[in-house]
Amino acid sequence: MRRFLLFAVIGAACGGDSSTTDGGTDATTDSPAPDSPVTTPAGDSVLERNHHPTRDAQYTQPLFTAGALSTLKRDSSFDGTIAGHSYAQVLYVDNVALGKGTVNWVIAVTENNQVSALDATTGAVVWQKTIGPNAASTGAGCGNVQPIGITGTPVIDVTTRTMFLSAAIGTQANGSGTIKTHEIHALSIDDGSERPNFPVDAKTATYQNLTFNPPVENQRGALAFVNNTLYVPYGGHWGDCGSYHGWVLGIPYPAGGPIKAFATSVPSGTRAAGIWAPGGIASDGTNLFVATGNTFGSNSWVGQEAIIRLQPGPSYSNQTVDYFVPHDWLDMDNGDVDIGGSGPVLVKNLVASLGKNGMVYLLDSANLGGIGTTTQNDGAFNAPIASGEIINAAATVTTSAGNTWLIAHGYSGANGIGCKKGSGDIIAMKITTNPPGATVEWCASSQSPGSPMITTSSDSGADAIVWFAGNHLNGWDVETGTQVYTGSDSISNIQRFTTPIAARGHVYIAGDDKVYAFHL
Image (tube, rainbow, N blue to C red):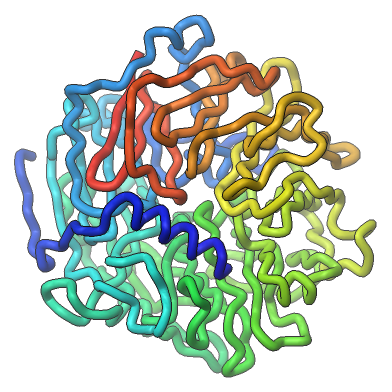
C-alpha cells in the first residue's frame, strides 16, 4: 500500500497542514441482503460510509432528476466551519423523520480529533467536541498523514442515537506527540457525550500470538455496526514500517468489551496484509467482507492479497468458501499492487473487488473460491479495466433500464481500458450476474481525487447519476456517460478518501476545515 499513502499525503500537503488541535478539551455550543440495497432507516439519514452496509453509495433523491439539475448550486451562506484535514465521509441525521426535532444534522470528523454536528440548513455548529489530543506524527518511523487523529468514516446506530469512531490519541496533551493508542468511542449524537463503557482502548486487543501495537497501525477503513457489534478495521502507515497487521476489532454494544479480534499475517514478525481501503468493511447484514494488502518477505499465503469473509464476532473459518486470492498473489505482493486498494462492494449475488493491479474481480458471494491456480479461475470473473491503480471506493446501482452498473475511479492518471465510449479515470462497467461478467461501457474524466456516489430519483433506479467532487461538483448519466451537471461553484481541499453524500435534496462533502453544501 506504499504508493497509495504517499499520494494521499501529497494531497493533504497541498491542502495546507497548519491546523492544530485544541488540546483535548470539549466545546459545546447551542444545542440488507446482498441482492438489493439495505434500507436506511429514518428518512434520508446517512449513517455509514457509502450509505448502506453493502457499500453501494446509492442515494434515492426524488428531486434529483436530470431536468432539475440546472438549479443545483452551492449554498454560499452555509457556514460548515470545522478544524483540520478531513478524510472521512460526512454523515447525516434526519431528525425530522426520526421525530427527534426540526433540525437535521451533518456530522463531520477531522484529523484534529474534532467531531462536529452542524445544522444541515445553515451549517452552524449544534455541538462540537475534541476527542483527546491527536498526534503530530505516528512514532512508528513512517506515515505522512500529519497530524493524525480521526481518519476512517464513523458509523451511527440510529436506534440508540450513538456514533462510533476510532481516534488516534497522541502522547502529548498539545497534540505534538506520537501515537499512544487508538481509542474507540461511542458518542451520543445529541450532545457528543460519551456512552457508558467507552472509550475502549484498541491496544487491549489480541489474536492468537499477536497483540495490537497502536503506533504501527492506522485506522483508515470505514467502520461497520452489525447486529449490536461495532467492527473497526486497521492497517499500516505509508512506508509500511513496523510489524503491522490487518486487524478487525469487534466491540459489543453497549457492553464495550471484551474486544474480539481477527488479524492477518499471524506468524510473529511478519508485517502487512493491512486492511486499509477507505471503503472499509462491507456487510450482507450478518457477515463481514474485507480486502487485505501485501506482505513483505512471505513466500506462503498468510492472509494477504485477499477478499475475506468474516463471521460475526469477528470469527474466521479459514475455509475456501470464505476467502479469495488471485493466482498471482506472490507477484502482486512483490509489486506492491494490493487487491486491498478499494474494498469489497456487494453487487446482487456477487462480491466485487477492485485493486491496485487495475483488475476487477467478481466473486460468488456464497463461495469466494480460495486461491486461484490460473487466470481463468480467479473468481467467477476477472478482467483488467484500468491502466493503473484503483484505490478509491466504488459505487453500484441497478437502473430503471434493468442494467446493473459498477463505477470505479482510476488513480493518478490510471484510465479505463477498453472503454466503448469516451476515455478517462471514471470507469463505468455494466455487470451481469448469470453468468458473472463486466464490460467497460464508458469512461470520462472525473477531475476529482475522491470517490463516487450515485443518486436516483426513485428506488427503481430512475435518473441514475454518478457524482464526483474535486474543485467542482460534477455529475454523469450512468446509462449514457453523458455529463449532465458541470459545476461552476468552487470548492477546495477535497481529500482522496472522501465522497459526497445526498440527503433531502442537498449534496454535502467535507474538505479541509469546511463542509460544503449544494441544494436545488
